[in-house]
Length: 388
Image (cartoon, rainbow, N blue to C red):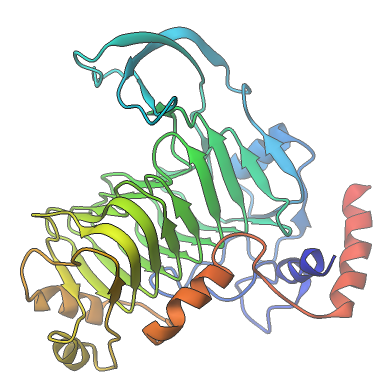
């Protein structure tokens, strides 16, 4: 009951004069600092998956509260006896791939397969989507922020079970041609493709914080993306953790990578990336060999340069039981200057000694806390009103 009530802060507590809304926990920081989502729209709980889809796609500012699992499996149809191809095995399992229009399977062995036609929900502008405790679950589909959508908050939600057996089975969160996105305290699991995928058009100003990822995690290819990525736990992955490219800006700090059997960073083209104050534990390949374009990585020999250009302390990265975290070139001061000039606000960079414990304790769902008996009374009154 305590953890259930703790999460209710994100629904009830007044926002102390902020336009952000009283319906989320904390304040967005980094590049997405000005996001307000659904603002002070009255919180409402969708009755079923149809209503949830309607509310996410309409043109009304909304604060949408999830207090149960919303199971979309089969809701968009099922492709039976369709074409897939064999790609990899892992014991008796592994993944096959859905054949797509580009002919991705090539000359790989063809097999018949059955999978959900899970195209994702196109989320419109000015939405807050927030879960209570660990109960806010979206199963069998993902979220898409596309074609001019902006000002969206997703907090304390678990997205899971999206064709996990199949490559090209769908992304948990996809963004392309959008702006002002805050993804916070989100857990993503059992996804066939990417946890978070950013298309070639700009995803604008984005903050990704306090999330819990595994397997293939983040694909960031958007032109002119500006992303603050911090306090996230990336574990048990085999690659793309993250995979970045195009002319974009990423500030990656205070994250915890652990038990990753493949590569973490794969960085090509010309992004500007500052990697500081992160912890890597048992990560076989922190940077994919030959990649690392545009990365400035803090260590004993570079931290002084970082502090001079950024005008503040720059914590080093710490690696244990891991390979090397290496940029393509040893000195990317241009990337530092790009991050230093950007409009990144409210960030709180912790000493690296605190990162592992903080991230493990706070990343993912059900990690938002409040001690207040008034919250319980207010919530029970509102809940009775919503239900009737």
